[in-house]
Length: 185
Image (cartoon, rainbow, N blue to C red):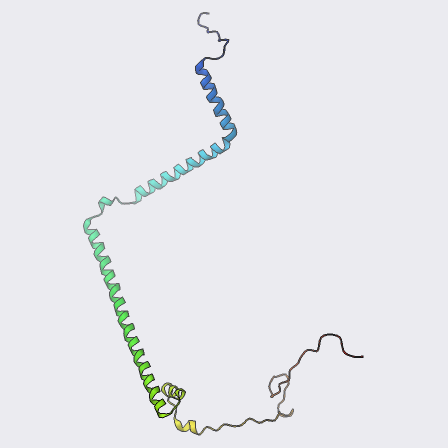
């Protein structure tokens, strides 16, 4: 048996020691962190699948940028410029209306101040001037108003007195009794 090689009594050859050391290191690595490695590999696989789908979806749906004509770009820019000009014109018109309204309000305030000054020069009160400016009230109706004095007597029970209604001029109301021990003795 010349072809048989007898094992070396000193141990395995030098090449096999490196392989056995590597296998032992891998074995200890998997025994300690096997589940973590497995979950990490599954996560990486799913991530790669999702990214590849996204890249394929964007390539098929988007048009290459070289297919856009320069004329189309110019038309889009002109349309955008026209829309901006239209919006600016509307804004300017609104600003003009606002300025006119402010001028009208200022004019009204100025007229009120003049009327107030004139009425004060004549000896009238400020409130009368405001009422006159807001609502024209005939002076004859204001001068004939008669103030009726209120009676100082309490109503009698026969004159529609109802204690539950809260009316009738009485100021009495129910009050709870005193707390604490009674003072009898």
